[in-house]
Length: 78
Image (cartoon, rainbow, N blue to C red; front, side, top):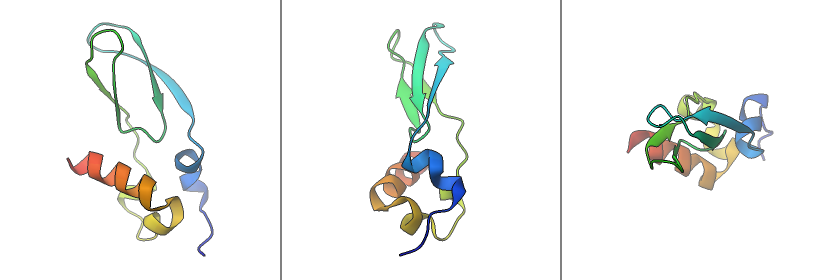
């Protein structure tokens, strides 16, 4: 099994950030492993400005796991 790199720590153990919705100004809770979240005030899609190693590391799938990898890659591409 491949060891985990420090860059994936926020993906394996998510951290919380509170952002302000650009549409209505409401507070939106965004976890570090979320690509986007709907604003609870107006349903506007707030994107996480996360640029993680998942986008470029060839070992990302083994490091963060199949489920987290698929979630991040599919939402970024879709």
